[in-house]
Length: 306
Length: 291
Image (cartoon, rainbow over all chains, first blue to last red; front, side, top):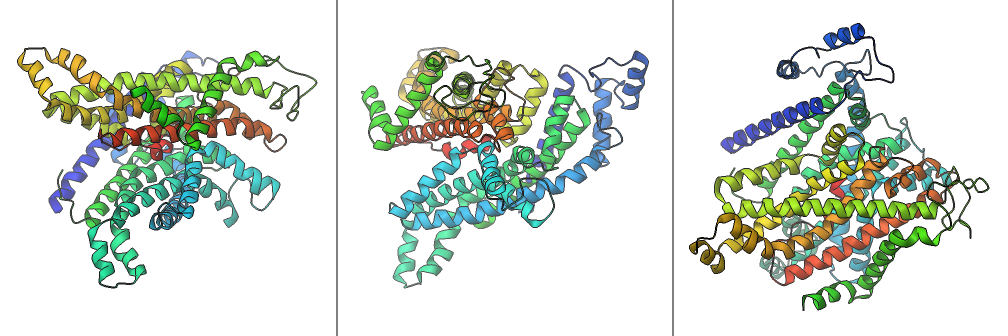
């Protein structure tokens, strides 16, 4: 197990370095620079700016400097948001993104598994057909439609909930629901599929023959096996929930880190984009690692190999 | 025979028939729609600023008085066009990649599929942002590049199929006859994996449509006065409080298209699996991950 962990950790770090490197050079290859404004800057000002932000060095030199900086946990100064370091920007935005994403993940897993179980335990009944029809709609409705619709219905027409911004508890209801919708539907479908598959397995008949109560059978003999595909889905889903909040942040006017990515890319704010990418990549790799480990724990049939 | 099977998948249940008809209608409207309307997509009707649906303007008008029906149809044309282009690119990249990896096997295979794995692990938005940075706001290049992301699924499926094909006698015969490896891949492997690859490509279409709408929604894709469903929905979001129809019409069109293509794509895939081609991995359940 320790060996497996070490190798996995090493691969994760390698991937992380690869992502940082690729993004660093791609950003620099792109035409345009952070100081191309509406107005051309006087040459001497631009020279000074470039020196101040370490852009006058050769590219490999800048790359090494960036890695060294990263090693110290410093994401550098923002090129366009003067007076702010990327660390500060991330520190204000990340908690918002994480809260919304985390709540959405919670909703997606609990509601998704419950719905999938309900449908899967009674396959091809009317309940099943209806629930699965609903999930189909959930998957087909993208967040860019769901989020504004929710605002329109609950914020504008009914006036029950705030239409955007941060503040009270009520501000944290609509955004996670909108974000979670397609994921809830997907988890419900996955759960339903694997529950139906598990129902036909032999060990269930044994459990039934022993006269175990149905609730115990569900908890001990169906769910652990049926949830495996859901667990492997959760890694990429957690990552997608976190990054997918870009749209949610825009619709609900939330100060998360997603908007930095969009702004930063348009303004060629190298350090800001790099900073957000670094944070995202770290979180995603972490999620994937956790999911892999959970997977190994849950299914004894999986042998450790790399 | 293949044709009759396809017809069955697309038309045999009431739901499938409804979906096929809806899609055909949307495609026809995207193609011919603007002909039926007397308005131009960038023409402003000063007498009907932000007016609700009426006989003159079937879908109403937007906040500067442009006819929403014509704009929705133009949006359909752009969104569907992009979906087709990107899907084509994904097939053109994915099939050779998967076939070469699967046929050569060994280290080459390991390396090629490892690249696919890494790309798979990257969140979509990061890739999109990078592409936007590189290609600027040239939407066509951007969406060609988008196709270059969607090849991952196809490459995996084609590789899986190729692994099975490689052991078939006719491939062995070709090898013994001294046919060069590229020729074997091109003449014997590719034609045999085309069917499954194309079926999975149909599941790429809704993914690309969603991705395009997402990018355009963020203001990074198609630019005014040209339009797409994503742009229309973004505009509609801005004005939905005073004129909800600006959100509802393009939103419904987009959702219906996604729903129907997902439905038919899943049916095609089930049909393929039933014939023993196997390898169920992609499905509409994953479409939303690409946004």
